[in-house]
Length: 362
Image 1 (tube, rainbow, N blue to C red):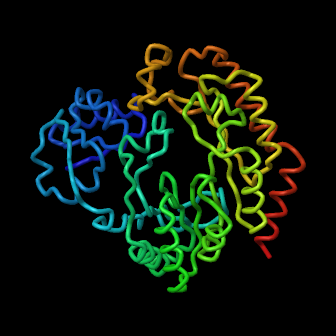
Image 2: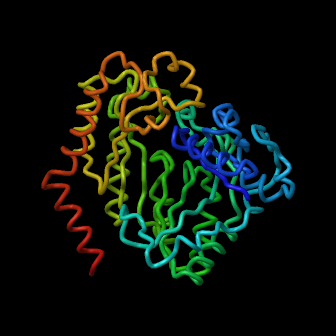
Image 3: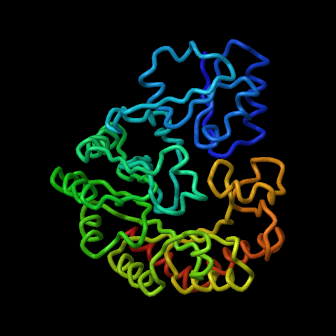
């Protein structure tokens, strides 16, 4: 018997689960995968798990002898396989009548999908995506992606998809080819992407919309340029942000803006400015998170001596985990609560959301 545990951020409950499995039956093979296990294998190996570094799907797909590995072993699986070598994921069991899809962009049964992997941007210093996927961008054949659309639509009636690429449309030529494939094959699907505002222009938005784009998630992070520069976070100017978000919404594309508070250079004033800026943008959705130096990321080495939490499950992006120069943990929690309250409990947002909901019902 084989059990696979996927770990984004290692936590005590995962380790306890592994211990219980091995105590019950020491012959069960427990594999730990994911960015955290890849970069912090000792935690799992010490508890008799087998760690598969990097992209585990290729290891299990191409290695028929994985049961021969020993407890506590670290498998560094190097491969030259393409993303197109992977079969469609087995989401079948998820797609039942009881399955509740995310309500973020509508009450639809939704399937995650990828067009690319890898991200070269400077925020790799504190982002977990490159830990497992690397910084080199790889893409699937557009025909294969649309084949997958057809598979889920034909067999399960799925029309809504969420692209889980670190930065969708980072390869413009590939994105246009994908859109043209969807349009030419007349596949009636909708999809959501997460991307960088710098990439989006009127021409690209137009073809994405024609292909089925319904929503965009973009990282705004902070309204303060010095805070962003210190964190090696590249963004476009606030004027460009406003212009592009306004254009997306005029095209009936919902925007979810993502913000981070508690950057190393943040203080109460800069965070309040970011909250006010978010309110001014008034996007369909807003998400606020706390800056977190994840174990395994390059920035972690600079902050590991400042981290005061003892359990990895506290790395939730909703709590401060290190000794901040300007803010205390309770201040961050107060400001995070203030951000959500001030954003969502106001007439302008409620009216906008209600109007959008009613338009969709027509």
